[in-house]
Image: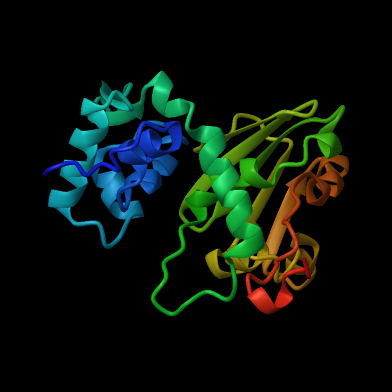
Length: 229
């Protein structure tokens, strides 16, 4: 597949030459949460055909953003992981996510898919480091078949797929309810109160949870709402 180029001696244009094709940044998004097998990427990115996925991964390998690895036991299977150059795209992807939460998100569309596992990166995008000052806690989230956890350490966050060892707080919640939480249409306290979610563990850490992640207030992109010049 011929690689298209903007033919501009500009850092922004050169970067878009590398990651600006459709699906490419979403592949980076998937790999920012850890190595993935080819089938894992297909599962998360419905609509991306096998041939195009293979072409995109070859492109990312060729450009030094992705490399092949072997997953540790018990999997011992081939997977893709980001190189250091690929990892450094993380802040840009998180910035796009924060912009999207403010300017691009509205009601879910009928044809759109939602994977709770995307929250592994979404939690980082919404994390309020100041609110986490002095807190050290491990939160585990069980959303249907998805399990992931967030480790808070005095203003820093690490989010990882899979269960946590000795979590301080465990949240169990259904997929649709979790989607409503992610969209800001509900709160965890409301979900717990009406039985749509459950929480166990350290109550003080649980009480601080809602302050750790802040969704920006949605804004309209309509020109009619723009401030007068």
